[in-house]
Amino acid sequence: MRDLSPKAKRGIAIVMVISALGLAAMLVLNALRDHVVFFYGPSDILDKAGKGQIVRLGGLVAENSITSLSDGVGFTITDGNNAIDVVYAGVLPDLFREGQGVVTEGVLEADIFRANTVLAKHDETYMPAEVADMLKDQGVWKGQE
Amino acid sequence: MMMFDYLANPTRFRKITTAILPVAVLVSAIALAFGLYLAFLASPADYQQGETVRIMYIHVPAAWMAMMCYLLMALSAVFYLVWRHPLADIGARAMALPGAGFALITLLTGSFWGRPMWGTWWVWDARLTSMLILFFLYLGYMALADGFERAERGSKPASLLLLVGVINLPIIKFSVDWWNTLHQGSSVLRLDGPSIDPAMLKPLLIMALAMLGWFIAITILRMNTLIMRRRITNLESRKSWS
Image 1 (cartoon, rainbow over the protein chains, first blue to last red):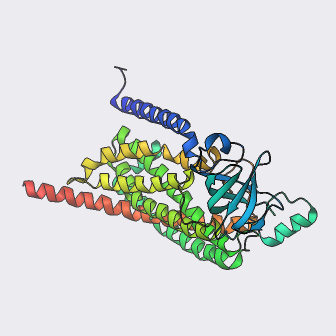
Image 2 (cartoon, each protein chain N blue to C red; image 1 turned 30 degrees about the horizontal axis):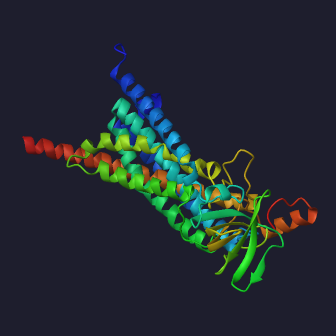
């Protein structure tokens, strides 16, 4: 170290400080993983949600699951493996429909999730409606309905 | 490095940037006119989001610019801290305000987009929160850099702040891959190619070019202003000594 120029020393110090900070940030974010995620899927929510605790549940609205109930609307959120029934009384976002990604906030009761908020989550695919129709006609549609 | 040494002479820097400035302004103006026309009139509505998707043509390029600008400032900070060249410090200072502007535009347009599509103005998910932190980093940098009687005294702490904050950039970029977020994943800069229709990608890239040209022009103007301001301060302090 003694033979190095002050410039080289400063350069090495900067590289070392940034690496150390980067590593620290990685460790912190990894440790806080459960708190950084915005929502849990139907598969982890049973482990993660305490009784009466407000949590967010996200996934796709299952096909043919939307029903109108006396106290609002009922639907099922699925991640392909597990599914949870949700009850919600309130205004649904425009993008809410079967097959759509949603994030709900509420409380997990015995076997249903009572939601206070329903947010729509859309994917990162953008295309004109004509292209979407064409893909559906050709049977190569991979997106949400 | 050679280029940096070459440009480091303020007189030469002034000469070169004065030549670049009109080109940047012209490119930006043409791209902006064409880009806005494509974005708001000539591009198709989205199959899912309808006309609301047009917010993307402002939101996404502004977000790219906010992140690129911070990266350039952090590189300037390295040049300043290692080589101690004042021009690198002036560069970072000049980029801070436009960078903060881009971050603010990203946050505001994102909010206007989130309300109709997601059903909320704001959520504390990883992408939105890390972008807000970027905005605060810009504000913190400006407060620190300009917080001293003699401007140069703030340069070193402010440059260190830039280096610390650079960790936030990969967090912003990959937040949507690492964690569950309400914000959707990347559409353009992704491994398996853009998931955005060419008719919508074109206005997006042209708007990005418009913002880039504007950013280059404004940075050149601000840098030359800061160089002159420093000269004036030096002359004044010399005068008061004699």
